[in-house]
Image 1 (cartoon, one colour):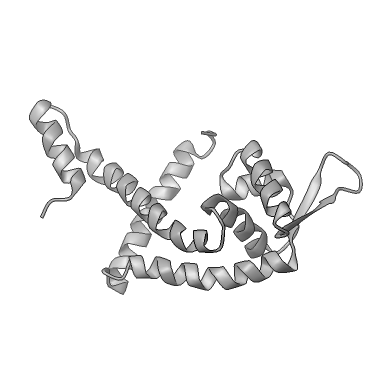
Image 2 (cartoon, rainbow, N blue to C red):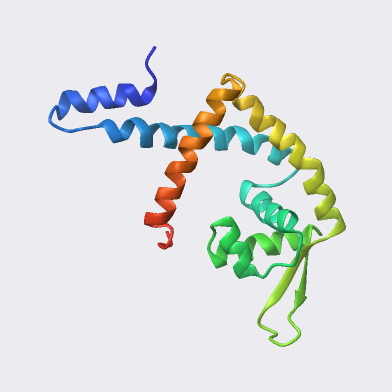
Length: 167
């Protein structure tokens, strides 16, 4: 059985036999897996009326368990300042996040979860982790660990090469 990336690589090899398409085997599969996983794992969040980026903001506030500035949230969630501002506005309107102005600099605000936001994250997280685990159910524990280690190695390399660049 051939996955879609193997088929694409074979098609490119037919057109450009001199081209080494080996990087597609990793990058193409990572991209395809990312899209499929993102689509699947967003389903439980939608049941709670959240998008993945909103969940990421709430998650950053919950796991760090302290007030964060919008800039800190942007760094934690790999999002632009404008995107974070929009998400925070929506989360504030829903009563999940509260904003406190800085005592010295009124341009800076400090954000934290409301009791409702904390309760929502504490309710959603176990469900989300369980759902994520079900997506990996076809891999035994050793293979999961192997895959996690390889992806961790790749991530460290990419962060070293590309981490300073903002996309």
